[in-house]
Image (cartoon, rainbow, N blue to C red; front, side):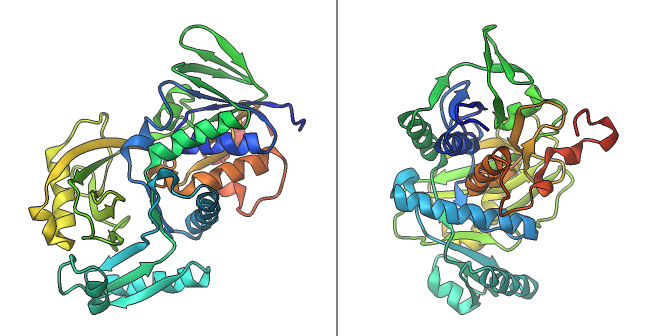
Length: 377
């Protein structure tokens, strides 16, 4: 593909800005389009973890590729995004969870992502704020915590420094093959359009079944030195769903300024970002079960947000089957920050016609289109 090829990326969240910057680095002429400002949408309301999740081998592949790319990024740009290389301490509350924790440690070490299986006493020694009597856990050394809005803002500015365009406060309302239309009636042509617009993807492309999965978060006042690792329950991602479609598992992050960011939950069948006291209470209770000292700490803010999810729980990365020139980077749910780098690499490799390190087909948008309905082979 000629290097004067024009690219429009819709959405300046963490995924969109990363894709735009990667495409510009590859030699394309990139315009990054955002209806508001970089990092102000889904990116601004989520948790900023860079974490190796392993619910499936494919998920772990994507996470590890991205985490290693993030490591290179922070070597080149130290301190950007308030990065804290605190690691993750997965906490097992019973023997069954402990077996899973040790299995996780073995699997990560086999993939050269350093992890250490721990006894209950070792967990308590590492983080004295945890309640006594835990079964054990696993410490993952390479995981980090970041502040995603600052990362997105930095990448958008870096894109401009490297010759790209940043188009702000213009909302895309319609897409066609190699053309997009703005709310003000103007149009823009591009050889390649990458849709990384979070929850707006479903509005622009209704056939792409991205939906909102609600979560609640809270943040404390500053308590420096009281927590060293990101604390996550081994129940994370496996918590039972209640009758009101709510699943809760503790996830507490120490921020660089001493605040604690408290999550997390997943709730389907929700349509807005209003706070649900019951859901927020469940999140706080889950965290206090592991970290009792939270009961005496000051919560200064709480909020809710929607994660853009896909029907099968895997991101949607690749070419639109029916719109030539349109590509998707969508449906990352809670792993958008972690997997943004790998998503950008997968897209640039596919667009350039290169073989990649990860099987593209697992993430292809084609999986949601019945074969007989595809217009393009």
